[in-house]
Length: 171
Image (tube, rainbow, N blue to C red; front, side, top):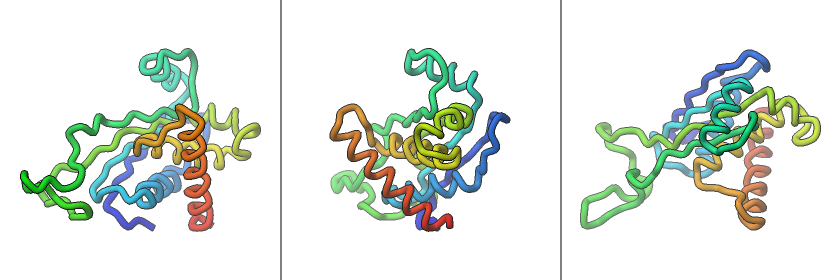
């Protein structure tokens, strides 16, 4: 299913909800491929328990309690973007040279317990909710946001498109 060399590192650091790491890795990679990210991109997808998520939520967002998904994009000011003719930069679509370091987009952290609790009122099944959270988190790494109505509508539309595409491929 993957057209890029994108690497999605997955980890399950909780034991409350069974998580199909291979499936969610494929979904994250599908999002990266569909968004046409550069080759050799790395993303971490980590599933954590409520206590770990609550700590992250408080530390980084100042919010109490666990949330469903958090995305931690890497500051991309230092990442190559496009061609810089005067400096001999790479052109769009060119492959990384073997000596180039990988591009690390960031980390997506998902709490399956929160997902399971909110699934009946939100996406339906726990798998549907986890799929939505994985897509949502990866899109945040790719600079999608939902701070205003227009951004939210655009992000939700893209989420639906990607989830439909994954459902067709996943069978």
